Length: 236
Image (cartoon, rainbow, N blue to C red; front, side, top):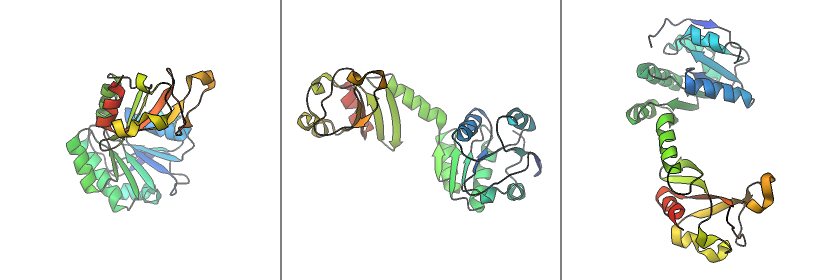
C-alpha cells in the first residue's frame, strides 16, 4: 500500500476525547473491529489511507477519515493524541504499521494495540512501544487446532501457556462432588463455572462450589496451563 501525503480527507473529527478508540486500517479485521466497537456503544474514529475504503464505511461509522497515519502532523491535526486507546489494524503494509505505532507512542497514547501478521512483525511492534500485540490469524489457527482435538467446545488463551476451555465433564467426574474429585491435584486445573443441562434452554453459567456435582451434558469452564488442560479434556 503506497503512502500518501500528510493531508486527511473525509469527515472532520467530532468530540474526540480520551474515551475515543482510534482504529487505523479498515481491512477485514479493522473494519469488523470498528463496527463492533460502535455497536457496543464506544466512540470510534476510524482512519484508512484509501479514500475508497473510507467511502465504503461512510454510512456505517460515525467518524471515518482518509489519511496517511505515517505523518505525525496529520495525526495531530486529527486530534489522535487526545485519545486514550488506539488499534493499528493495518494489514500488509508492515512499514506503515510500524511507523504508525511509533508515532502513536510519540503522541503518548497510553493504550496501543497493534495487529501483527507474523511473530517477527509482532516483536518489532512491541519494541517500538505497542502495549498489546495480536496475531489474529495465528491465534485463530491455534484455537481451531485445539477445538479439533478432544472434547473442547471453546478455547481462549489468556496468557502465555495459560487458557480457559469450555468442555463437558469426563466420566470420572460425573456424579461426584468437586470436593471429592481431587481434580486440581490430579490434573492441575480448576473448574470455575458450570451450566447445568438439567436447567434447560434458559440455563446460565454459575460459579462452582465444593458441593457442585457434575452430570453428563453439563458444560464447564476450566482454567489451567495448556498442557494440563489437554490432559484433562483427553481424560475419560
